[in-house]
Length: 398
Length: 161
Ligand code: HEM
Image 1 (cartoon, rainbow over the protein chains, first blue to last red):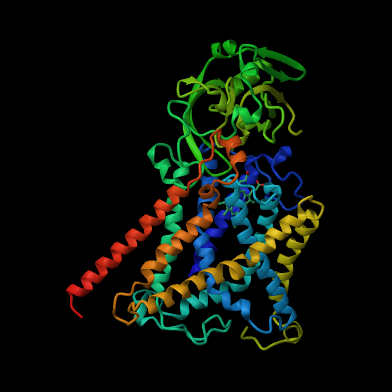
Image 2: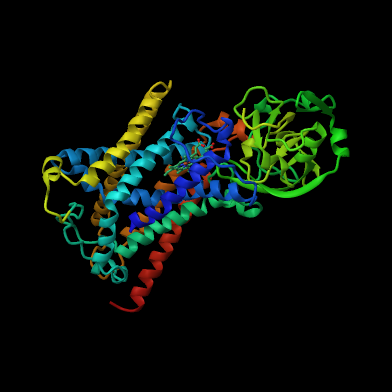
């Protein structure tokens, strides 16, 4: 039964994880880790519609990943006799199977541990998260596919072999141990039952609901955010139009008031020409307002109303026409995300903005003042803040 | 498995599908291992992976089954009923205790306030330890479980037996 839940849930976690990689724009060599050889999802252009795409896919990745933890642990608990099987290896087949199981169990718990530490900003492991979680993900995917291919028939026959619904109506006192199974997982001399099968399923389901209830709040705005009681994004950091969460503070990015003050200029470049605009000039251009979610790769998200100049208007001003891509650079000098390349659809979309305001007021410095990129369905880390230059390119690629 | 064992099965121990599928999965892992071998932190990654593989069976399982055995011994010594047909307190302690342990494990960095520097860089806020929030959650879980227990005992007493 736990197996069935994992058979449905884990593929969703796997696919949303790979979508996260695709959302970074791997065609520009900007998905992390950069060099992944042939172990990558098929290339495609990340869409800008629906605007909640990344919010939902990455939100699901993290929430479902957490919600499935009790199920994974219950599954491991139910197969613990395997650990003490003796002799440990009887044939080559069994040796291979044991190695595969090591990858399966190590893989899932490694992904859970690194993922959980990452979303809570505790990089206790001391290695690069992207490299480890990406390649760990593939090790797990391979082991999971092998495991399902070999065990699916056994799961189906186990679910069929017993009157499942009838067993769910029994209390602990009527609960009888299972008949001996071919894998030797049923206890040979079980003690009296203290929990019914229904009770065990309810317990695991209840724990999953508890964890889900303590996590979903980070994808909401308003009072419900508080329900993510123990998560870093379980509260609004401030009040007012700029009170929503920040993903990298200006102080950490080394962006100061002087560099963003009246001396700040936006430089647009295309085909060897450059155009420079100050903030007044940008505010004098046609403004567009869009209410769009912004979703962090760490699974939390928020929806705000942004106002600014359309990126396609800026492309026209730069004389780029229909650009194939654009490289946006930040005032931030160091930092993994001080620049991001946008695809053509991400520049030309009607809601793709260089935002100057949020919720009717100027952006706060922490939210990217004087100007930041907002593109529907683009991961938050690529919605570059403190924009300094936009370089439009007419041919695709680097 | 019901097929008569062929030559492969006697030598190898299982069917061709088993061989192909397992070798396939192990190949991917082998390729990843070769690829990561030059990483500066390759040793740590391996350590965490192997650690993860044994974390449940050799760390968590002995912990929670040991705690459970201790709890049962304690209940027996204190004369709590284990008779069938009676309301037993065992699960009313087990369930909130398990929820407490699990939430502690999952939200550990927040509860203990780890990673202060990264947290501040990312959020622009000071990291406060959420120990108080977690303890409140645990207290509520135990209280709810206690109320359910009291209601069950009360109902059983009213219906006689
Ligand atoms: C079956 C288990 C899992 C698999 C196969 C998996 C796979 C992946 C993959 C392939 C990525 C893309 C990595 C990249 O872009 O470099 C990813 C990203 C991510 N995963 Fe998982 N994951 C799993 C479980 C979890 C869990 C349990 C959590 C956390 C609670 C988690 C948190 C994350 C986060 C935060 C990212 C975004 C990283 C980033 O782009 O900054 N994952 N996952």
